Image (tube, rainbow over all chains, first blue to last red):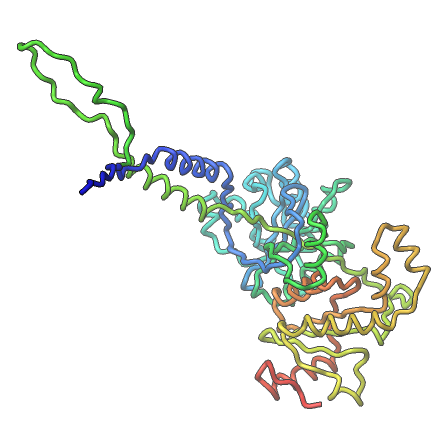
Length: 221
Length: 213
């Protein structure tokens, strides 16, 4: 009977290419990752089909958290001085001045959510205490004492002649009256164009927008 | 095997009798823990990376004015009013709400159904369109789609009540973009509308319930 010789094949696999790919992917993710900036106040924004990118400079952001508290932040990483000027003149407009040393405690992008009466003390806090400080929100409810109005007025003066965007970032469960109060403060300053911050989502299938986007992939609304 | 082949075993040379034999240590490295760690890190970075950065949507509000002639005029036949109540309830009516038609025109809806309502109303307005050359010429001159003129009488009024939340408003504004509604506005509900909403909410707590017609 003829013997069938089955060649003994090694069950070893050379893992080197596998490891190569794994580390390639790893390096890609390490480089591509942009960590979420630590937020003092978590805000869960709604989704929208909009595809415009969020500007990082020359913008002010008005945030509304889930308890309808309003925060103001100046997005001017290029020019930190402008943010300090805004703080000083906004506080001066309310006759509760902030000293230079106190204003130095502000870094662009930080959220301010205190009334002017507590602003100086809040800014002077060291960074770690600032994070732990529970801010009560900028008073906006009472239209006669809408402090956001002064913030926007000061911003307008200091950004005069530059493109400035008003970003409104609201939490899913924030109530509409808070949003309306923010809009009212902006309207009082003659500002009618705003950008609402949302998370992207795909256009629902079958709708007109979906048809348009799928027929011409480059088309951006 | 998960190992690096260093190609040893090429045969040792003969050593003299006095030479001590060095113990042969394998130069193979077990790569399994390295692979484990590699994939662990990949998983970590995949989860923490923010691939989808936030986007923004435009909102343009009209200037507040006291002058009658500066106000935007809306044709009642092409108007659709959508109100947002509490617990994500929507209410809508077409055209004008009068005392006579309040019970039949005022309808309850939800976010699932509202898209069909908007599309239906838009189609209805478009079907009534009579060619308006001035509008089409203007659209062409401005580089816009002349087909937008077909819906020039269509106007959606979004009226959130005090109980509406921010997400509802964004969802409705988004619905305008999704359905390509060219003209819409965000306004305050009238007192009569507020009363109707609270009456309906009080009468039928179930969101799906539609008033009898």
